[in-house]
Length: 110
Length: 123
Image 1: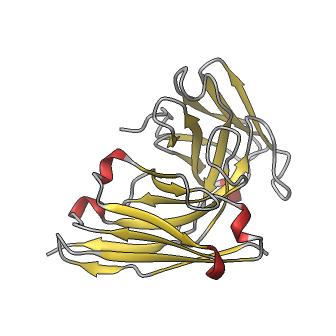
Image 2: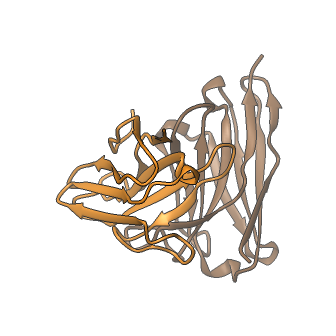
Image 3: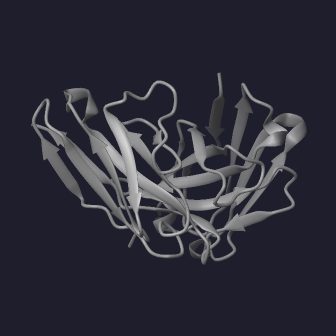
């Protein structure tokens, strides 16, 4: 059971916009930044969004992050087949004094 | 280029021990906290342990029940994860991950990940 809650799967067609939600609590998402990771099949996770809404160098601007209260979201616009991957949210938990992750969301491009 | 290379994984029997290593390059190793995150087959990411720049602060997740110990050797740019009394549920790919800060906490985040090393615990 993951501390942060994500939908197991989302899907969309090329060119569409999809969002992935991440729900937490006051001890993590509600008080600390959220980071998002992309994991392609067979590969290690890669940082895609940091500090709620910052894109590291090299991440397409089709990806954006947002947060409100104890929930965060990753939005992907202009969906492309190469975006098909697992996406994980993560945040520091003040109560556990540890990093906590969502269960991951599998994005399928139809 | 930041590189983190894990080694030491393999197949062990329940109750046995294993020591993982993470060799770092491409950045000033002694300035950054390092973490271990694992991923069981077909499952999500799970935070295992972390260590601050000088090893003065470490963290081990509750589920390891004291069986894992993280340490680092800044002179060799290497982090270790000593795992004892391994159980089948410890089977996973173990990733070594760099922090953006020297001390772990809300101000930091995990930026670079190694490719991982597979630990399989089975009789």
